[in-house]
Image 1 (cartoon, one colour):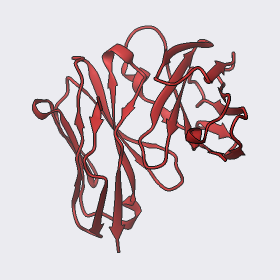
Image 2 (cartoon, one colour):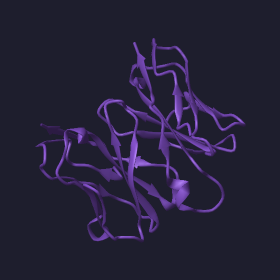
Image 3 (cartoon, helix red, strand yellow):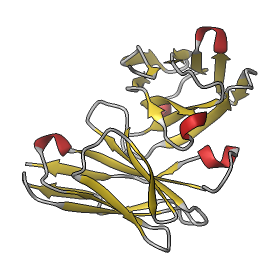
Image 4 (cartoon, chains in turn yellow, red):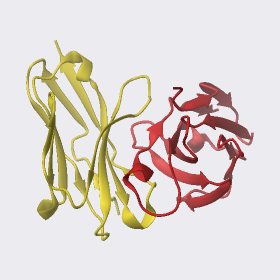
Length: 115
Length: 118
């Protein structure tokens, strides 16, 4: 079974639009970590954020914000006022307390921001 | 401070051959994990090395093996290559050790090695 589901395969927006990337996870562990990574065309995964299962406080960092809801097992990522440089593949990932260090990735969402 | 480095950048092999990929972790990191990313997919965990031993392994056949050296660098070996082994191979480093800590989970990824099997 897929532990991390990113239902949106591709999203296209025009610059300055807001966009939300969805992530749903599945785990039986009570201790776990959720991540978002960005993968530009160069291929290197860039770490964006990490949340632990005991901290449901939403976070804002500049144009980025994250909404973590344990009740719906979701960890959504919003980019406000998108820019062309935001174009990339975004991955949501899960690390469980029982297998720390091993990341389970979703299939990714390709975001294209048009000028 | 050098980040995670991988070599080579690109590699082309034919079916049945063997390949070795290399990874140097971020300075100060002692744990190396390898991931396979097929085109259009998310990375899949292959295995993780700590203190020169394989600590965890994903659902990959024995054709995939690895090694970690005393300086924490690592190699990924794939024998009897199949067409389906064509992928981007990513190395990630982190700070391991006994116990559970937030730092244990923060993994830094290298640029990857693009392997093409013909």
